[in-house]
Length: 182
Image (cartoon, rainbow, N blue to C red):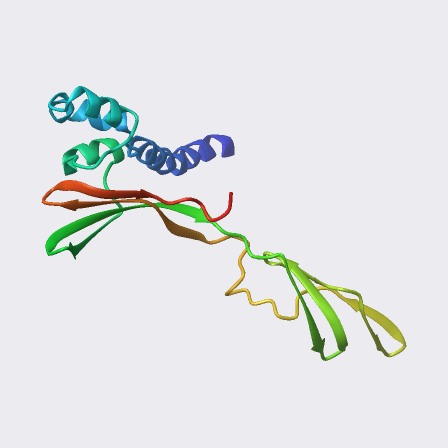
């Protein structure tokens, strides 16, 4: 009887998770899916531009619709001015995870001098012995640990990785940013 009651509860708990997963998976757009949804834009391009768009590449002079086919919707749009002409810059962002550390530091705590070392939220203070009541204690832990600053879940930081600038709806410049570390 208990087993039969657990199945509907499990099914009810799994249904929203499966629906959310399906939504996330189906919302990922690719160059191919944008082309298949808007073949009229793709067919009106020159053979050279169709080849570039199919590879996810752009060139100066392309229209905003063509860039959208190749790169998709930007994460941000910024308006500006270049040589007296109104501009619109599209910024594309990826999310990168950054871990803290490793770090090391000397300190003078309530039990005397020591050296702390940590990686992420894990910290160890090297062998500080403290005598109390005839017993010796060794303390482990980071004396400067702040649970609101350090987290076991590393932060995910938005990092721009490509931009494109338009004047009168046409590409005048674009950039690919390199990763700061390999």
